[in-house]
Amino acid sequence: MKTVYLDNAATSFPKPDDVLSAMINYQQTIGASPGRSGHGRSIDAGRIVYETREILSRLFRIGDPLRIVLTKNSTEALNIVLKGALKPGDHVITSSMEHNSVMRPLRWLESQGVELSLIPCSPRGELDPGDIRQCLRHNTKMVILTHASNVTGTIMPIEAIGSLVKEKGDILFCVDAAQTAGVVPIDVQKTAIDLLAFTGHKSLFGPQGTGGLYIRKGLEKIIDPLMTGGTGSRSEFEAQPDFMPDKYESGTPNTIGCAGLYAGVSFVLERTVESIRTVEEKLMARFLSQMADMAGPVKIYGPNDAFKQTAVVSFNIDGISASDAALHFEDHYGILCRPGLHCAPSAHRTLGTFPGGAIRFSFGYFNTNQDVDTAVEAVRSLVIR
Ligand code: ALA
Image 1 (cartoon, rainbow, N blue to C red):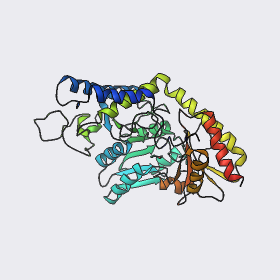
Image 2: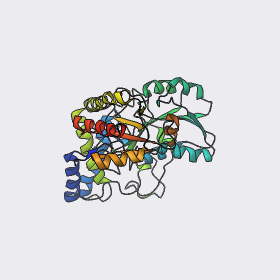
Image 3: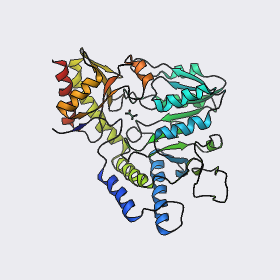
Image 4: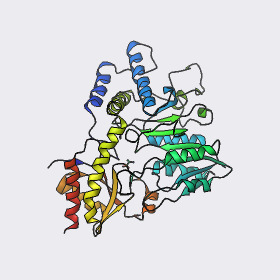
């Protein structure tokens, strides 16, 4: 039986061949620590890390590559922002569709005296920008939002929210692009994004253990580092450097991961984000249109519209739990998907699917129409029982 990989929202699979060969090439021919030793191979390793920053800055239209902090995932990037910027007495606004990578640091900060407003989204996972305006307070320091839900794929109106936040002066606007970097165009300047957290291993096709954070110029002055330690720079001082990106990058970096991430982002830029998005929209549209005649026994959550969501869809089938359905899909159709709560309990409460959760199919650039049809056939097999 052929495997049908429908778990791209967790991590994309497969990776382009160039990603794998870049990683092997680094380890076989360079293999040194960047920015530390000064010998030729160390300089080559440093070049890989710098070029990764550079290509990411091109992708997100960030003028200066040094505004990007390389992290091990978006969770680390989000923790740097939230724990580094928010202090007791500050107020932060977020939505009810957030992943625990946002929600857990915020709940922890709440226990330390940070005030939190959680904006309820509609049962389709949609956010009304006007609700943000209503929540603003004199001490609001940050608005942090997912760009797209990892449960329903709902794409949030971040352009409208970015303008609204900027009208209010010095409130920080932070976007969690874990589900969109590489597949939905992002321009940090046009959208007035101050802080952008992203992962490398989903739609950027890099390996796991890669990700990053864009920090707008000057904000490093008000964001404390999450970790401190050796940076390879200013070794004469025991105090952490205060400049970008070293302030937030301690310890030997993931150079092999950078080699893969660089190749992954090149793959995206060669095709363009827009054309990758079109491929995924078509897959999603094909799936949703074929699901329409099962609308009674199958409940789809979220927009149910390929143009308003990423290629992620969650649903339940009458009379069977999400986990049993996923087991059936794997055993009988070779489908790999993710059932349950998707590390997003608040999103599931919003959709009315807590605590049982839902089945999630997440399509990716390498899926085919045949994969979509197999997915539909698999769902149909549980409807007609
Ligand atoms: N956040 C990832 C997911 O949604 C891991 O599966």
